[in-house]
Image (cartoon, rainbow, N blue to C red; front, side, top):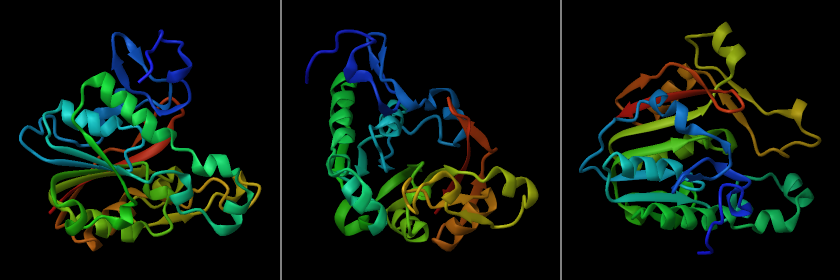
Amino acid sequence: MPPISGPDDPLLAAWYQTIDLGEGLASRGYFDHRGVMDRYGLPDSLAGLSALDVGTAEGFWAFEMERRGAGPVTAVDIPSLAHADVLAGARERMDPAVLADTGLARRFALAKERRGSAAERLEMSVYELSPERVGTFDVSFCGDLLLHLQNPMGALLAIRSVTRRLAVVETVREHELEEAHPDRPVMQFGVLDAEEHPGQNITYWKFTTRALCDMLRYAGFSRVEPQEPFSLPPHDLPATAVVAYV
């Protein structure tokens, strides 16, 4: 990996996640989860537990679970945007170079090396998870992924199939629906008002906490513990997290 010259190094720019890289360096991510890690319900100690990070991006939560003692830690994500749930019409309008970019994997490798991590990254879709392909894990984590999926129920079923103890699932929350219907399993579809054409932002779903809870029960988890809703810094994106137990 190329050396990093300092905090302003271009290698640290335009990441998805802000990740501490040692020696006072951190990536400059679109999201900075460091100040809200306690809002997810992830156990403080994961010592002796295997862990899976679904939709890992550059690896923030894989490395955090490892820091909490988990091992082995497996991180999965698609190879590039070309493998995402992009509508055909939106795909035709996208720059082929953007679709083919493998920057998330490269940045994961950089962060792994800098942190001395043993986490392993596998390239696959959440829909491809199965005990036959990846085995099973004590703890599964999935953050900021369901909104980008055409089939979030299918994704949760796949996560349940590889989870032995508990899963932590976080996603974008629809604040107005949450306030108007705090105990109804309501979801909002699409963001047409923020797009020039349908599917441009690859964003399909916003949830109420109750909706996420009920979907996790339908996916086969026996008990769910919703966490207090919060906002993702620095853009104050409303979020909700649920701990689901096998």
